[in-house]
Image (cartoon, rainbow, N blue to C red; front, side, top):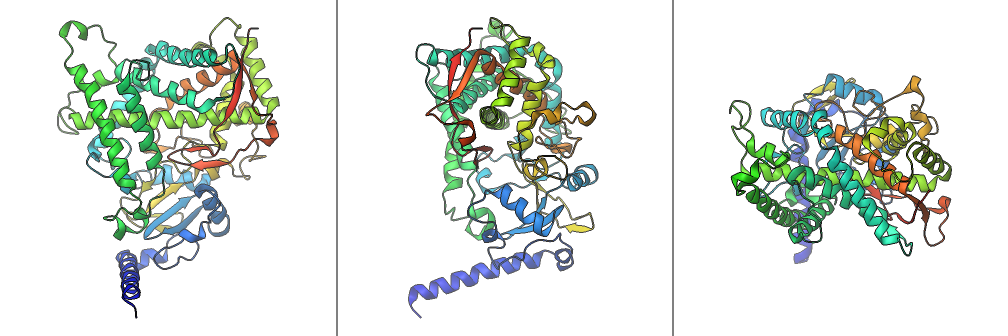
Length: 511
């Protein structure tokens, strides 16, 4: 046997032994009562059975129809994963097993120098520190009274987006990257809520750098990482994902730390003139030290700030870009929504939050977009904190639990014409559903303890941003593309995005 062949043989043997030991550590009786699923291959599990063409949520939905329409087990390398694919299973999970399945599966790219879980709403395990952050979010950041007080900030950021589009097309209408304008709006909105400033104005070099590094973090965070599925490769980081991710996190933290230091060094006479933004809330927090710290460290504040940007910008952009794409793909729906907007709001008037309740079709379009294109098709991965029994099956401790809300939202047993974009389905008051976590056929923001706390903010920003650009502009596809010829394929990153970014030509509407 040649030298390299010998090395390869022992490497494969080592891999197989590691995989077998991991399987052995799980109690054999628990393995026997796992939900059904395709037979795994040694070492790689079911990875190669997922297909190379379909994206994960679509592959998982296909396998679930064959092996387990409610619950299914997949082995992603050595990672035991239970996939929830029906509203019935989702209801059982969030109603009766919410606490035990409230753990968080933390991927390798999220671990590093700044992986302080005590400051993370996303990666922290369920417990006292996480409950403190959750309470802070619901009582300080996303409380309705605070959101009412900051409505002018949202209006200003959305108006700036509209003005930027107008400046580009005023003299010579041209095709623009629609998603980019949504992203810049969302980024500046979070910057104003957090720091009371536009981070991406023409004079903010720091803001532009923060924008760049935050974007790279979202890019690397969405890449499949072989080290998550074959743990013996963690120390190698063969794709360089963790290394690159941590580099950009470190740079973004450095910039955010500068903003925090500027605030802390402000003279006393300027303190009273501030608007008590999110950063003030974090700096002024004082706890009793019993459940959570007595005050937040600079690292914890940095983590909270950074997660606000990463969680708030990409999900907003994804939803709004898909909404525009579906409207241009369905001209009748586009015309119906624009008629509602322009018959309710005069051409010289700007859309305001007070108008939203009088625009039911606009709200239905947002809901239908979230049904077909949930920004996080699997939500953020859950983890079993201890073994539990669910629907007659066992979910072992430390099992990853994925809720395929993409599949649930397209289930033909629940939704008529499930794959079609029909906002009218949300106008039927007898069947009205919302996305607040209690209608399990429609949970784009999750449910239970781990449900997204920013729903009150999203429910204001999404219709305002979409309605504003449809009220102020007429939109046509460029390059002679016809609506039915649009490419509507998806791609996965941290969020579910269009494979080909949406480009369209805005034409100012003058009434």
